[in-house]
Length: 119
Image (spheres, rainbow, N blue to C red):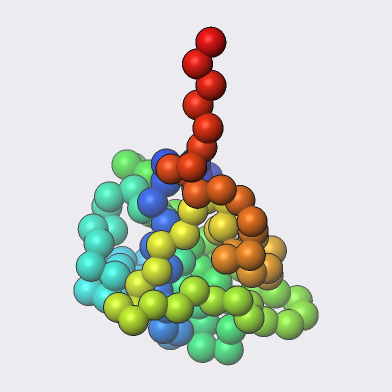
């Protein structure tokens, strides 16, 4: 199972990807397009050309996980944008994205704004 915690680095390929690619093809895209090591433990998120499907690729130390989600109705409309072709998400933003929502409209505080109370 893919473990996603608040510390997990999540990288999103902004441009759509040909979903005929399997694990090896997506790992190559992660290395070339997203400029990240596919063996690093990051979760890589890819969108299909139609916008109805997502694929998540992650390496857990023993092998790759490839997860596929296809919406039964509609499309993933709120997709991160970036000039470089790669965007980063926080764990809670990924959860919102996977449900078909807008990850930038979560209203959650960024991790650096967390309040620490000393007693």
